[in-house]
Image (cartoon, rainbow, N blue to C red; front, side, top):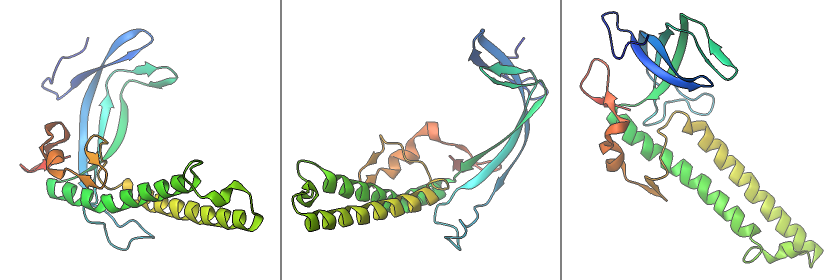
Length: 196
């Protein structure tokens, strides 16, 4: 039987669905800590503005669970981690991420425009060998540029805030809307400041 909320030991109840229907599981809370951000070596010697702190914690499954081919035995300890941001850190992180995201999207758009069959580079039609080779060279340069922009974006996107596509409007992001979204925020442990 599952406990609906917290009991005196701090245990809580959750449920999941498997091939036998809805299953209940008891979970005991564990210890946690928040680690400050570290530089993204070797590319960055300092932390980025708005870079995430890391929330590390563990939970104990007091009942065994199984879904498809994955199972955990009773008393299994789960070690978990997540990015976490204070309010100011979050808005700063969004501002840091935007140029990387914009550069990545623009380089992809330039490549697609160059390759477009209707409006793209006519040299790629293959009518003149030397013109076609020049077109291929330009496309190869755009691919290299796009891949470099993607690499830089991928390097930072794991430690900066994730942008919901409904909030991301091209080059602009409504940071106030992000900060007012109550579903995104909780209380920073030991403080009254909000965290995401």
